[in-house]
Length: 214
Image (tube, rainbow, N blue to C red):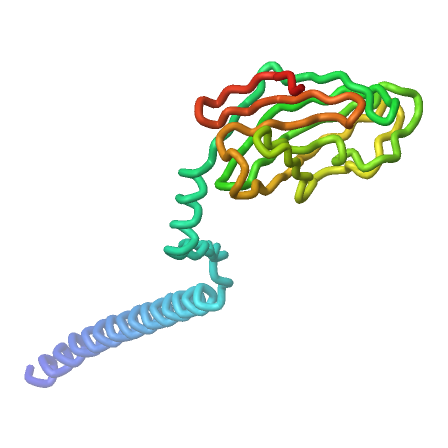
């Protein structure tokens, strides 16, 4: 009887040990699979991090701020603006004259005065079918009525060396006024000794008019 019970106990233990062994094997395989998956995920994450670190940086736009004007430049510009006076001729003052026996049309569009410098913006048209090879700036003088003295342009800006037939030249005629000259009423002489026009520019009230000079 005891022997029979012993065999029954053995028959019971063998399947139990087998079942426990299968359970441990299953758990071992599952844990190993999870480890492999976790390692694979870590490798993928590390690879993506390396790629992001090695990716080229976004383009950077550098904006250079110009240096601020110095106090000297600012004060000089402010002073020039305060002393700047302009007379706009609208419609343009159009003068017809004969210079060196050449018919010309002279248009004056603006007169500007800053301190003792006076600029005239002009346009000259040659009305003859021949080129005019004279210094066109010789057409312009500033006249002082009290002394009878005249001054020539200090500088010209534009092509005034010659004028092709039916050609048009434009630019600036620039004068520097002597201290002895009237600084507010300026008389511009346009032409030569044979044919001239005289225009008075009044920078006090920004007016102009053509006058006769005897």
